[in-house]
Length: 248
Length: 310
Image 1 (tube, rainbow over the protein chains, first blue to last red):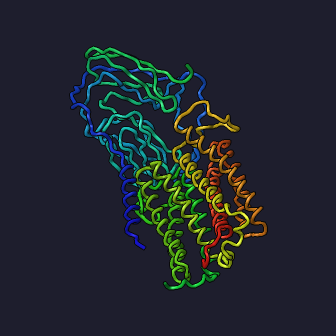
Image 2: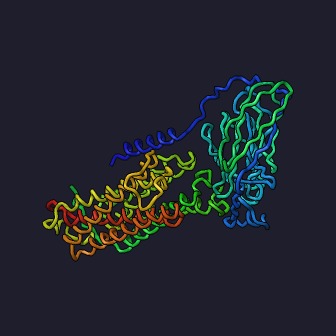
Image 3: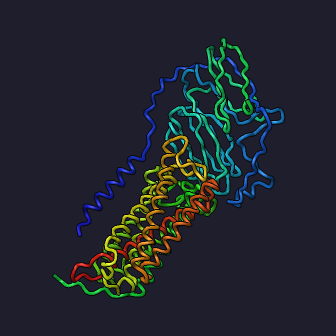
């Protein structure tokens, strides 16, 4: 029997199938960075309205190395509400009005510690390095589920470090570990540095804004995007914008 | 032309073919568990796992690397089966079948690697699932045609009773395979709960690509139910007393109802791991038992050309 033809057809099909799967980010069409930092400040608080649902307890019994690091119960981080109703882990950012800024050379750090991502929500600029560490005595895979950017999935043993870069703005990018199903976090990729993640009290402060008209949005893991809010800033001026999620 | 030696029954070869078939069934279960537990990308590299042959077995790695280990074992078993067939079989087409199985499992490994490296593209994952079923049918065929009931049978012995039965059985098995592919598409495109209600309204209230895929899988279940029921009726009528024929056909009939029940349970439990995984392997068992029935239908009911052997 002549095996050459079926073999050639099979290998060609596989190559085509593989080539069809390779997703590439579109070539960066961002304008050159022209942004100059100013002295304007926008600050405020993000609050949760309504009855706070009970956070689910995370079971880490799939990996004893994770479980051993948590003598106390660990709870789901998708909705963290402080005592005054402040909502943590909300990414507040300038959606419109900011120029394109050159990325800082310093990296944003994402740690895998005690089988949780720290921070749970973060922001990074386009082309700014993102360093991902595994500080756990077990292995993790870091799986970025990106849509506009190229996603990635890298394995890390203990003390491994990976550096990644996103080339396009995207909001949000989900990160997950498929080894430990409870591990996930979210990142926002921006063309400027005007973003902050709220702390436990729900407060945020965005600094360094030049004078201009801005549209701000807040994003929360469970509730998604808030309604946009507009604000005008004079040079060195300040403004306060509050957001809320939960019951309307 | 050199005359072909008559086929002989080799008990050890047949038993080993059954072992490979059983191991393949376990491989299908291991593969189903990988997707059902969401562990498909827990090992991001291929062919190694975290740069080694044996990573720390924890969390999702247990399922994904476990699947690779079982796949490796089945590949080795298939190679041994190929060698055994080459050494003992006189029928050339059986040798070709064995080599086809070997080619299929190697191709299957490549598809598995591709789907991991490219982060589970739906077309590749569906091809991986579809080829798994073809491989299972290939090793099932080897188990059937090396059995004494096949080798000692007179081809076309019942041809006068229901000559169109082989064609109907072939249509049934083709329909099941299409349904298996639709199931794989439902599973890998995330359409498993696109129609979340049961008992369902026959037509969904709103249409989307995922709803359409899910709907086609439900319609496919109706078509398969009808065809398998008719096949069972015709087989038990025309082949009464032929246990090598009615056995797999009755098995297919029982598996059909189990499969329908599991399909409902997937909806009711919102894709719990156990019903979802068992649904995959029951589908494979239904396909394989209907395929075995079809093979036997062709042997018994298709008029044999003069001078044909087994």
